[in-house]
Image (cartoon, rainbow, N blue to C red; front, top):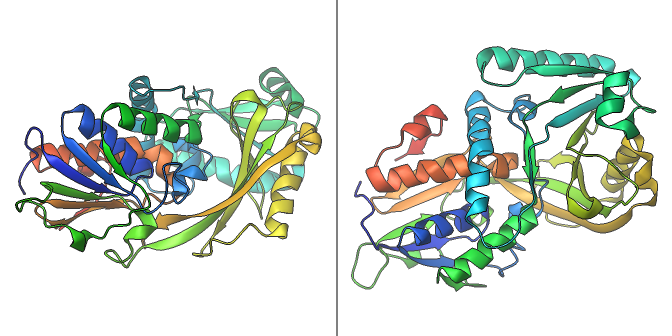
Length: 363
């Protein structure tokens, strides 16, 4: 596999989260970038636009593999570095994750905590669980103490504002002089990298748009509600243990909250159902009564690009073509790690980080 040369010409397909991160980083290194996307600059077609952007490796260890957890730990250190180089404000918080449950769900909570502890034994660099009494909850999140008598705190976990980040990446791309071609879908077959008049490299970051080239991809539908709730005082991402809808609430700036839970094996991009919306909002109200007077800003749906094993992968389509896909529900948590894996592959032809994170690099 050839290595990236100075001032290379690189075509990037897909201007979602991975495409923008790669375009910014490579343009800053002096490469000539052409970025193509089937949609507009607001990332309307990207899964990253409909996300809570939580950075929660221990919380997510309950539903994913150790390599993904290690990627999430890597990202907690990388995101402040990435954000510091962007044009525009991006909310970033590392205030931990709060896990709560109602009395009738204590059995499910006990099993979840046991799973967290098991995963900590596999990866002892994860922080210890902090069990919270009612008095502890009162000191940490006073508004929850009338409804919950115990919980668990996962220290060190974080979140960011996904839409502020996408906007800051766009502003940075503009400043760096990246050529951007909006509403311009492209296929890998449209390029012959390395030939005269063609880019030196092609990077495919199209998510579900890449199914024509990577047919194993499938969509996993997610639904989120964004509300403005001035009366809600939650200070960190909060997760509710529940047998039907394990809710998360991610507080952003200015009393904006992102509420989600649903995960449906479907490529359906239609609007959210009444049932799932009612379940989300009803569960949120059980966490904090201030949601009763919240104003619904948006109800959004999107499908996350997912490979059969629910894990991310890189594929070498040819000597000068790399495909990056399958970030599933963990896009913001693992994208800095995937960025660093791809940069290693481009510059050296090999990636120790890929082995550390168990990211397969398919030939």
